[in-house]
Image 1 (cartoon, rainbow, N blue to C red):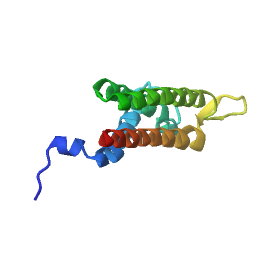
Image 2 (cartoon, helix red, strand yellow):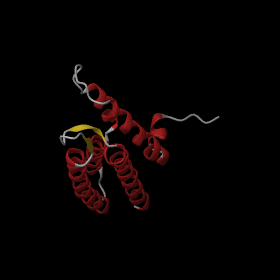
Image 3 (cartoon, helix red, strand yellow):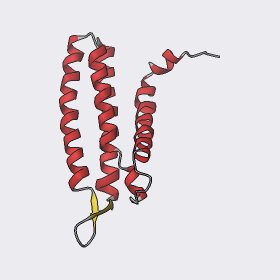
Image 4 (cartoon, one colour):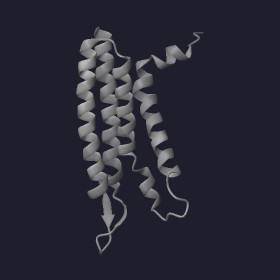
Length: 143
């Protein structure tokens, strides 16, 4: 029977591809629910729109990787990823503000649209995180 340390678990690729995205989703949902005013009457579906929050956490992870990295080639790739994620983050914020809502007859937002408000932004944010980790881990393994 093998005994694994936390370092062994945290250094596994599967941890970065499965556990980290799940943690980002859980933290995003928790922040979404806890940040609402208690008397707010928002539609419960709106709490599921965490794509922009997840992208912000991913950006923080990327900056952390840049700070802790010592390889020049990997650092260049990380800087490219920072720029890519900022562009995606701005697009996500724009989508979140303008095109992700179901509108009433007076053009007032009522609730998040299922696809453009919840599924698409959340999926994009998780795919960006997983693909970033895949690229960086493969670069680090090749060095």
